Length: 486
Ligand SMILES: Nc1ncnc2c1ncn2[C@@H]1O[C@H](COP(=O)(O)OP(=O)(O)OP(=O)(O)O)[C@@H](O)[C@H]1O
Ligand SMILES: [Mg+2]
Image (tube, rainbow, N blue to C red; front, top):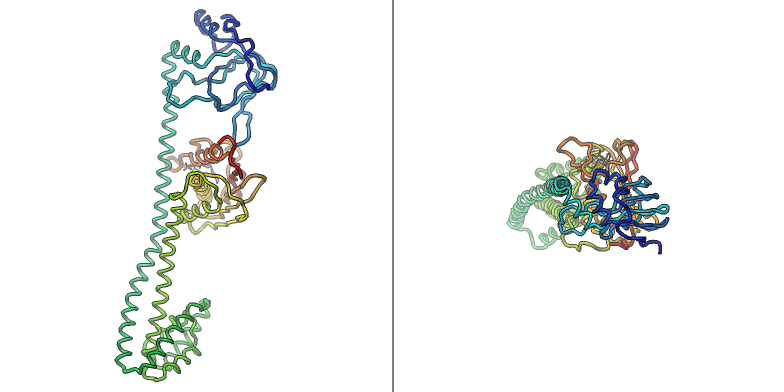
């Protein structure tokens, strides 16, 4: 197989110090230093098409191109993307960081290299190259180390901070969302307490009024009937409701029901009409009892409605808590087979507050999509970052479209917005770490970088941007099968 590098011949000393001096890397070195390099390096020949360096292999060698044309590449998801192609004599690659202090992380090749035609290289082992650099250029190495380590730690610190900020914003939004139903529930509970007290009072009055036992039975039965009717009542339009209230109010006046106009809306909402009230008169029997009976039924209906309100509010609270749980994946394994829709929906719930009322959310989901292998919590971070960007781009007004579909052996999640779009010259840059067009303090420029790393490195997928004014889409492609290298 031409895939294995051929070191032929690998005899140190084949390049003389004078040969080495013609390579720009070595031009300023002393004779003595060049002699040392000549003694420690050798030449290598690679026939056209051969793979010299495989991305991810341990970085054990340092290469300098002597002749021929090479192509450098990086793996992006399943694909290999050519990053450079050169025939410049003296270009170097491979273990270019072997002089850095060992930080315990095994060094690997960060990209691949292939010979496009017959190539010759000057090669040194990573150990020799590192030793030479540290011995001869100690000050330069300190500066370089400072630069590399500093960049790494600041990137780590900032991304940690960004994560905390995002979490803070999310929990603030969640608190706000929880506050509405909680306040509604406590309001309804207060009202319910009053109505129940009213019912007790009415019951006492009914009992004191020497109501015959069979009449009391009939009343209880009536109560069940109206409650059942209320549960099935169709919702009236505002117009219908006010007509109905007028009819009921008039009826109450005719029948001398005290405070009848206050009760009319309660009965109207419960789907009770004048005919129904006439039936009630018959069932109650004695006209003396009618006023008490109607009030009693009014209380029954109101308590029922209040209990439904409380049920809705507490249901909303627990669905929010569920969404938060599912969003943070508190009770799920890190890596598993998932349906992408669950995460998308819980992310939308978490971001409801941020999305606001001015933005229409369109969910165009293909429910028949198969499950995919994924880290659900990480994907939620991707949806959050993309939706966050879309919402910010639309500045509170527009349409957010979440679409899912299948394309070959990938599931695609597209997040679209109707904002101004990404200008052509910036399209390439938006995924770069720290690239932001937002004012200082508002964006760190890490949202897309983090998302890209999660999708491409973590899932073997890809993110593609398609944007024109009024129609911007970030499409996340996720493979249906486990990436073979993961
Ligand atoms: N939907 C979009 N419409 C228009 N521009 C966008 C959109 N999404 C991203 N961009 C551009 O890409 C830049 C980088 O986005 P990224 O999410 O990486 O960082 P940010 O949103 O600026 O900051 P952060 O996400 O860290 O708060 C944004 O500043 C913006 O200019
Ligand atoms: Mg962002």
